[in-house]
Image (cartoon, rainbow, N blue to C red):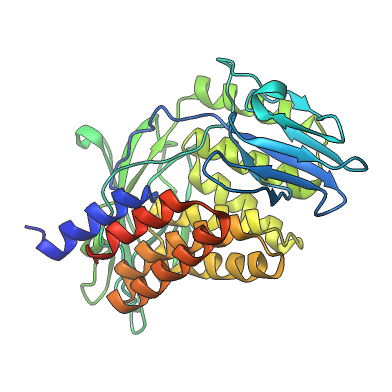
Length: 361
């Protein structure tokens, strides 16, 4: 039975609207959004959420809801990728409501995940072979690469994949921490659980039983066609990586999103939005230590760019991360910093919400 403290953590996380992982989440029906994919010069394009008291500078990767206001300087340009993958170039020298250029349609390719499922105790204990991938995700690949945390002192690992209904039970051993699924047949469409155990008895399931879903061929083919459609727009490398990652996340392809974003960083992408989205995605799959690393780098970049919106959102996310892997004291520190940032934005509703949740820590 879960402790009272852990139940409090769940209530707190849901109160913040933080995206948190569960063993087998359902893909919820969630709001569409639009994405800034190009702008110039920096600082001359701004946006405002309904709860803000003033406009804030926008950047590549900024998420725009339909009711946001977009202010474009008289000598500025901006391009927005709408949720249905049409593009919109607002007129310079005026303020527009995002819905004017990106009206609501049923053909939404990118949606923003706000999965209100309960968090797991995914503290990523360094003494167990916790799963790295695939974990809490859907997959296009039916011969996935399996990865887990290397445990000091472990000389070998047993690896097991079990299918729903016990229709598959594949086992192997490895001295490495990354192997390719090598069953006689590719994994058929369906849901699978992955379990890893060290030679000294430490098991990945000590932090929860995580799994993955292999998509059927028809669904995979449809998604790949939509990826090709996006590539034909010839966006900048940074914008393309973000748009593609958002699309993958909309389809629960979390590890495809992670791969795209991590590769983009290796290629020199230094956008706040990239690090923030990576932090969000690692949080969704339960890799909270990796999430914290990416959030902290994103926060550093946001401060350098005077990006109050990203600062506030990252600081709020770090509250729950800290409750899971650090301490109550650190969580409170992040909460108070988030309050400062939201107050600077003029978003008093968020300030009050955080104050109400402070007593739950």
